Image (cartoon, rainbow, N blue to C red; front, side, top):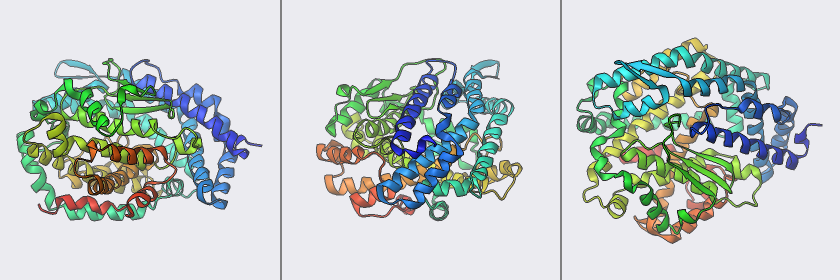
Length: 497
């Protein structure tokens, strides 16, 4: 009898597995260790991810309702992803270790592959930015893409072996989200903002990069996002203090949270991508960031702080499934809620003392539009990638075309797999943007435009955070605001252009 036949025992074993895996993830990507020893972790827990366990959980999903159905869905997704992770653990470990050790050369300079992204974002010379990107893309194609392809192919094969018609069909069931409906909403958003896109972006490009949309290259975008001209608004010495002050306004004392560990130390192999590691929820949470300057540090820190505070506030008595698993659009929504304080005019004035925040607010609006249109295009691409009807060989051209059309620039083909997160995580981000926008409007209407200084708003958020991810983003939003989740609300801020 598989361990899953006793749901509570299965959940207990699964929690130990997830905690150990997340600890390994933290140690490697925070730069504490070069190796990424996930193969042993998967091997020791392989019985959790057998096909008969998945069949059992799938049957529970079809039979259950309410919280029992939610538990079954979340555990089924864990079991499927565990099986896929176990089957691809060798390639995943090799990919992480190869990326950590990989070096590139450009203009006579030798640099670690991961660190080069930060260098590119801070490089004022367009020619050197292009040289860095070319070197990174060459390394990606030569060293990493073969492993990405193995992982993608095997993941798609496993979806069919498990009884679904495609990877897309698998995740439509696991997520309980109509991906087709979401794509219709994001397509409508893209169409609604097509005319506004150049009008919003062009002035900001000229101000930040010194060029117009007609000369923009993909290699220029990291420098545009870095926005060095606004560095004076975001002094490095205020980074942690601004977060502490903001949380204090919500009635949260960061320094008193023994379960929150803030990792901001520099390490050579530390990933440039900030993250929150949920080793034990809610007892041991890590917020990891590699600061590289300016507004991006503030945005990134506050985004990951949203995750951190969410997981740190979860009710310990909840089942494992609701503390660790569920719809990640929820935690991403809370992360965006905190992140977007850093482009809120009232927050900029009151916390950072910015006397004229409007130019930066306008820049942030353009920055966000690039991301929104990019992710809408990514969803359309990934539905084709995983739809089971087109060969993988067609994907580089399709990827470059869809992303290029969305952003009006030539887009590199070579990142057609590296730019894909497993499990349609792109859908989590898209739904989280809508969730955050609708929740923020509710907070402003109830607690005022400076809701971030209201302990009552903080209490409401902690009540929501305590629920973990028992409810999905649509259910949670409706329970608090009465609204239905709809990505099309994102177009409203661009209507005046």
